[in-house]
Image (cartoon, rainbow over all chains, first blue to last red; front, side, top):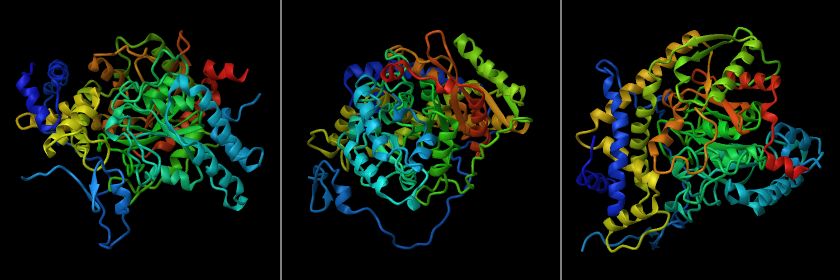
Length: 95
Length: 489
């Protein structure tokens, strides 16, 4: 199968990835080759086969709704590229 | 002269217990060997020399009554697992400078048992790869031949174990990332059952597939590490409460054990010596009393396409959190949207970008049912293959990889060829069953050949017992890479 540059740009936009023109050309080719390969799954008749998403044996157990200890705010903020007044700082979202 | 680094974990345990040497001596020996040899291997991304020595002194001061199973023993941890206070990069530029404030449960349990984390090992970026060539911090070299890859993605841990920097190391296995590098480096590597070991503190790649596993030079050492880290963890809702068995290794008896050999795992194009050594090992199991049966896992060929839809799909969601806001570097940008696009565009490497793109495509409107939905259904068929097989046999035996370690650069610019390296390890990952790889010989170039045993879910004990029995009867696992042999002479 083939992908258009517009399709590659659309996927990159969904994934929040800024790509160079050179990267777009490479991924267009490589993704098409991989998608060709995985397309062989269409050969199989799976009409009556249930999908599996989760292998957990145990159903998500419930715990008592009690307050516990959490990581310190300072420890978590220490890794932030920018912080101010105990909060993560980002460029303005609204004018 | 006898080097303490050459001891197995069990030998270190008994030597420490008998006070034949101290933990400080063990840690110093490890640090010295790392300093001398790691410049040519690059197994480590970070070595915590000072804190390791402090912990060793602490271990040496503690009273014998406090002696814990891994008391004072140095270990290495793949750099996708967090250890509080030690940088964690996941082999990626997008986590450069990140110092996690918390420790992964698997690591914490080993530390509670007395283990000393000596450093963090190299990995393909976010564990995506089969060679460590996708690490943003440079490739790791194979201790048996420096021009070759150690496998991946846990290549650093496998190489560190093979080079006897540490007696044991942690890795992670999403599609084969413990078993394949164990095979390439001639060590023993266990991928436990999905859910057996907590994923808390593991930087997520494919959440329905990720497993924390262990490397050692013997099945006995791997059993020790595995039993200490396994078991339910309230911090991981997918961790299982199935009881962890005590792995009884004394007098292993394989009489009556039914071993299935799946015909689909002996394919055209595989290295002849790999098939030959694997078949010889199966004959050895037969000599040890096992019954060998040919079996079929008919959907084997679909494991690779299923995996390369599901794992990237899960990865594309898991890696959305790396956006330049809470951790890691941030690319300079005027708007928040540009922070996301530029940080992610500049800091993710090519393979990670490729998989995010692939996963995003497979989950996008119009393609979801054809790709993701169909892959989830075929995953059911692969699981059923194993369920059917394990009604007739106790274990499955097959090669771990189609070839021995390939040369660095061999699959450059051909991602699909690289993916094919995982063809024998992916089915067990999709089915969630445990697997172990251990050395069963060497090829004409002196490179280790690994074989894989698979067992029903939660039967790691059967895997470890069989591998242990094999290692009692053979000595492939005792061979040392030349770089270590020459160092000791």
